[in-house]
Amino acid sequence: MKKHKRLIAFTAIIFITIVSVWQNKKCFKEINSLLKEQESSWNQGNIQAYMLHYWQSDSMMFVSKNEVTYGWKQTLDNYMKSYPDRSAMGMLLFDNLNFQFINKRNVMVIGSWHLSREKGDIGGNFSLLWRKIKGKWKIIIDHTS
Image (cartoon, rainbow, N blue to C red; front, side):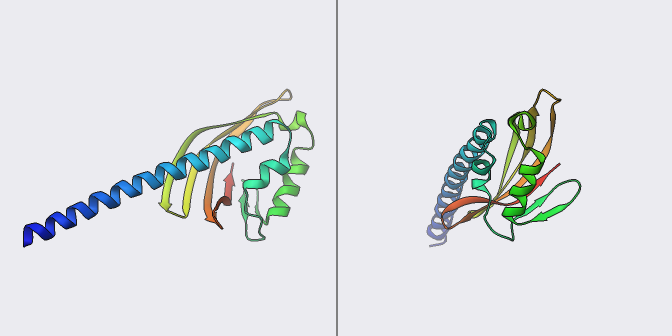
């Protein structure tokens, strides 16, 4: 009887592990695809499309080295002010992505960003907290430096 219970417990652990790995791979593919969409939108000069993957809420948070901004609209306004034209925007590349799966609804992505521009390249690091809201992955906190 004890062997039977151990076998059931072991089988359950293996099953849970397999499901967890499958879910993590699925989340990785989904979020990685959204990050590629953001790169593409930015590189086409479309900040509004770039912002589609941010949570459209006053509770969304953008943390930079100088300040904390609350709200999707204010974050969009700040991007528009800082990057008024294609020349200022340059070409965006996300790199060195590291995914930390917190649970099935929350994923932290840490990486680096680089803008290639005529007036001088810039770049830094970021951490994005993605949350699945109403079936869609959204950035709820962006910490970029």
